[in-house]
Image (cartoon, rainbow, N blue to C red):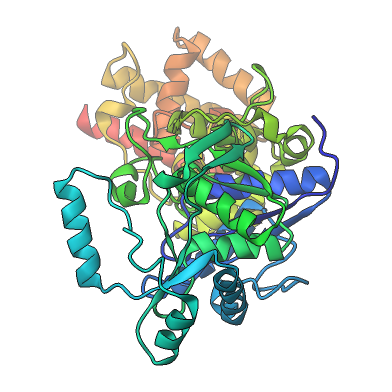
Length: 496
């Protein structure tokens, strides 16, 4: 179903910790739907939890979204017509609208102390009742409550859930969710500090910012009916609600959580997006990976460049079922996107990894190496290990590794000496003649090409697995190749 109007969607993280891949997925879906409909993608910072606020986390949100290429149209850093976009800067707005709810009889001041609330909870536990506010302050006359507040008595503001009755909330993916109002608590909307909680601030901001579609985690489903009631109390039209699927651990058991980040970060098992950048994953691949954990276009297509993602994305194809995180799939997608890059672009991506490894990362040199590794690496950092031998002056290698398959030490040394002689006799190491000359040598020595090439690979690269040998030797250069072969021969002769 094609959207009929431009959508206004928001990504509204709380800067109390790093950006989890689940949050990045929400941001991606918001971005895709905004671009698909020609609408706006808004970034809002929900920073009312001042005790846990982390300014570094907020900066990481910006950095992560920019790395992923999810550019926002309005936000704290760029402004927009519906600002401020940081909740801590919207306090006067919240105070105005909380008074509207109180005056309308949809909210009330609560003066219960922490001690009284604890006693109530303990009694409810003894009676095996679910914990809830007992409504002690619901019936305080509004004028009396205002006088007590004016006198400085500590208070919070609670939502006054209509009694009796039933509330029906509609989620795009799950349909109608009907609950008895008696099961909905009189939740706190405004703390005694004057700070709003999520249930109030997010709903108010979504309306005032013209949000048409709310995409958020399924952890908000239990309080979803409360949010619908708040909209109804103000008489506002609701947005389209979309509660996304839960991401599970790779085992399929248990929710993937920030609290388990250190345990999960093993190999490619990182749950924070920026960690994946440091581990050599492309943003395109990360988006492809997380995008398909909860959405699919059909049963066939799995590779999605951003332009195709945008053109084919729809909310109706989101899947509410929990999705297990598959890190092998991330490796798979990263390989696909690495191979889809142009040589120049992949070179640009590789240079920082060579620099971080302390290798002389002249772009010209890296651009020669890039075509040799592009088909062989799954992550950008793998290129460094695969190509490190290009930059080394000395190639440490054990005698046993230099001995050819089914050959003696003397036979291996002789084969390497003959290979060096062939290389010295060539005018250049142009690839086709060079390779043919070595294959002819293998025939003359009554060896298989693989035997000779295996010994040369160890002598020149020090690795059992390397980029294509002939092309690698060409880049290393005749002088260094001969020097490395001579040293390898010496090792074999001295140990034989």
